[in-house]
Image (cartoon, rainbow, N blue to C red):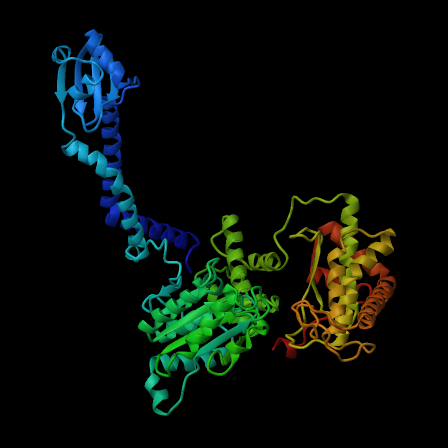
Length: 638
């Protein structure tokens, strides 16, 4: 695993290399341009010093000066006259263009005898200086035009500068020799690996499939929650097949300029076809692949044009092109149906959150290059991290290493891993967040209320830890974990969870006859869970088994993104049912804490004394009051 500084260093190096290439290729042109500009400025200043004087005179005034005998000499340059008087002062004037100086002055009464005493110097307007100063101003726009067309024609592309190449793909290409990630570096998702092995086999040996008339899917869509390893899985496919890997995000297609996204799509597919066999990977494809017709511009906005071009390019693939398009998304439900039809992303691979065995394997992978103390038991860590994704587990291992290094230790202990679990789940400890004595009592009873209800109600998860040390945005926390891995949850479990969430609110009101802002998040969680029971999962006898809202809380029957077309009466029934569920759970929580008031006081006092109660200490307290702790059976552990 690379350190964070390495990519930054490489990026800086690449940036500097591009600048150096630019100056190596065009440094001469730039220097010539600057040199001409400096020379023109210098010579034009000299020209002004020779020809331009602030004092101007009419030709009649020059003639009068000649008659008076006060003119020393006259320099003639075309129609320009420079008159030097006896007192060394200088006048500037103009004569008639088609007449000579003597004829012009004679018209104003100057006789040949008077003019003969004046030194007249006629200089022709020619030579290098004259022509250079007149032609040079025209060279500047010409040089600018040449440089502009140089940019447009793509001459700078080889030098690492792409100032005007808006339509070129921004895909990052990973060389197959440098692609070191394989399926051995990924734990879990065995079914997903099996699906993708067919893609690898096709890229390695396409003749086997073509000979029997089989066509490999052109597109593979990786779907799953954030952090489940979709991008890593795509890189592993490229590493196994040893083919070039073109990687970019869906948002990189879209710019403010119309048509840029479609142009980048064409350029990306052209590059991949030239490098075939190859893999194109589009991360977060929902940025451009959302269902059409819901954006602005009547279906002609930039995002939809980009999507149309992707569809066209995927249709254009021949069976033997040997280019596989892979994409990843967290929101497969919002993708355009045209992307998912056969011939495009017709193979969809689901990546699930890892179970306990997979979490253990993932932890072992991330622990390969980390020195672990002898007391480390990764099996325990895997059991205490249900719901963690692969990215969460990687962060957990990294945080534990940071904790050990911060305390000047050379190995990672089990205690470091346990602390890291809470840091990833809730946030870092805030030791500076000090409570007053009254606030400490409120927080202690609040967390004790959660814990007692979780321990008493039969369908709630067991308590593993209770603490009044602030973490993240929480003033305290109660950590509860399920007895076993479950893919489905029941109505009874949800009702007990809601009652447990309201335990802190009930404890504050019962002990202090008042409530604080502490239960605000608990109220949001319980209300959201109750509403989902009513509108999504059909767990309300009053409303019935009807799905009224989708995953994002919007009505399924609505025509728009945020449509809500069920009647006001149905909405009132939903609100009433949600309120009933909350009130029933509140009554259950009150009854439980009243019955076990002594246990509530004991746990709260234990928190005030120790601040944190681990599972064994907590179980010891509640056993004294007849509450039997929930433990895993041998079957569930196996």
